[in-house]
Image (tube, rainbow, N blue to C red):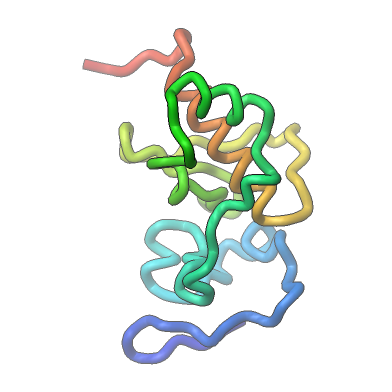
Length: 134
């Protein structure tokens, strides 16, 4: 586990680290902020951490075309996070976590997981079966 300095910055993790680290150990998040939001803040270690557009899902490609976007726009900062050791996506609209079904097989790398998270968030937000309390 990376150690944090007084500013909450952690040492860079070893390359090829375990992509399931936070599923196996929910307490293994490296900084106080990561613990609060339940996910690893990757850009702290690599400012070039941008979505790999070769990994877009067919749904995301169609969605971007429908929306007239040249890039992922607001979805770039959506990542697969973890709540209480379960994969989840933070939805700013409901200010809460959307958990991934336990039966869903997750990809082996973080870029693919992030693309899946983006797709699932859009599907969740646009689902007619979602009921918001008023």
